[in-house]
Picture 1 (cartoon, helix red, strand yellow):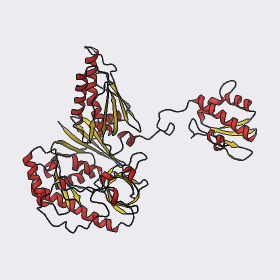
Picture 2: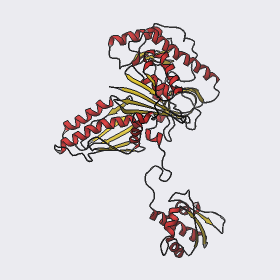
Picture 3: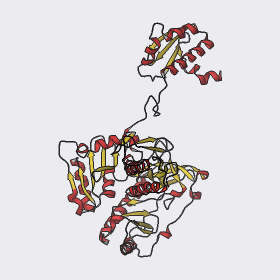
Picture 4: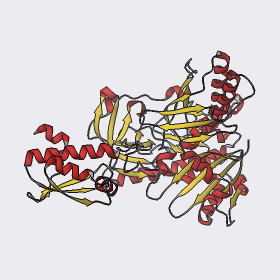
Length: 517
């Protein structure tokens, strides 16, 4: 499989596209006013401990308190230990079984704690944090205040795993844990030692910054989005790394020459006049990734509906007309849909509970084929996922790890008029609501004069015709209404002004307030 990484950098944002066989499968976006938080470390203060939720809320110096589940507790409870043993090497045997477990009994309201963000804030939810601190390098991950060594499960060779574990036990300082990453396969002891030294250097700087930090706030920021993607994704299997910013190209190549000099020649500075994302046809894939409806080759299409509770995906045959019977045609569309859905989930970065409504198939063996196709396609996804069998109703349920806001929430905001529902009040219902409000105002105040400010479209609707609707409202309620336009108002918004009381009385006669009276 051919892999490429394409980076587009502007003054307002940096976008990174991961391509597989010339198709966009992942997109990362970072903006100056919305830098990523995952991986950064904060000095926090425990605000609340809720045993019933097995969780605590931590003030880390931002507007929303961070959420920390007891399962995310680790050796970082309390402030960091001094690195008095960080220079010493130990050859004592270590094992994953030595990993310490913690419960919420050590958490006390008001205590200071060092935490690391593991999930970005999404909507009204604050970030999720962990006290099990990790300092990632290119070839290994250092875990302070732990004492075990692990090796990536993706390394298949037992002999290579044993060799890497022996090196890790030899170079690892006491009171530190290590996880050897997949990229470390075939790497020498000196390379891993250099990577560990970089992690130790970062940890010492963090420890110093922590001592100087008086209140809650950030003490260590992880690499920028571009650098972290290079660290985690730029492997020997990647065909090319193309960057259209000269400054970013210099920074990235400097980092690559330091950690993986053999890959430096794969980094390319893009200088064509055609925008880089247009050249690689990424822009049109982004637009498709933001669309609710996706057409597939052959005529079938998908609908993506993202809600607060779950993501619903509907598979439709559309214009597809097969040459075989209904069962075979349904299977063919569903197989295509399974592959495209898995790609779209990665591209859109959708997480949480996902329900897919496949076209009905009556034979169990066909449902099994679609299920296996989903499993195979999901193996390319680096996010954690779980998948259930297709039900007799054609529904497949799955979960996918959610770390940051989806692509839709990155590029779009809820509509100011419909608050993201996609629906607005009909103009007839707004007129009825307005008339009820006028009737309440008239019955309570007995005033005969009123000022109303409404949306321009609503004013035109009320005033149009030989006998306007506003005239009927005035006649039925025996009141004189002075109608004015509010250009910034929504269709269902209006304000009422009492000339007698010389004030805005809109809220006084809403349905809720009138019930109280």
